[in-house]
Image (cartoon, rainbow, N blue to C red; front, side):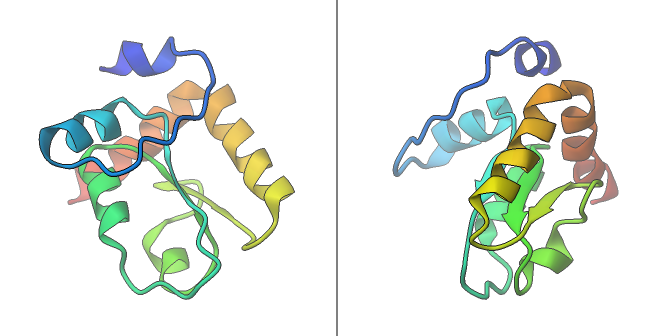
Length: 111
């Protein structure tokens, strides 16, 4: 699994509605999960599913998200509505696969 993440070319793909094992497989293979909410979120299940798959989360620094995602530890936070900040965080994740893998693994190890 680790080598497949490290060797992928950078790309963005939106899958739409998926569930079950297909969703778990996609989450495990993802470089990161992006949660670009501009609304105050409580405790989104999507973030728990990403962490269960040992995949780091890049999320808006708003509401409960800033308490669930530990910046630099289990993922990265960006300013809500700031596309340039989001792009910078995505570049950080994609340019350093080792750190990305480590961030994804931290939550999985802590749980």
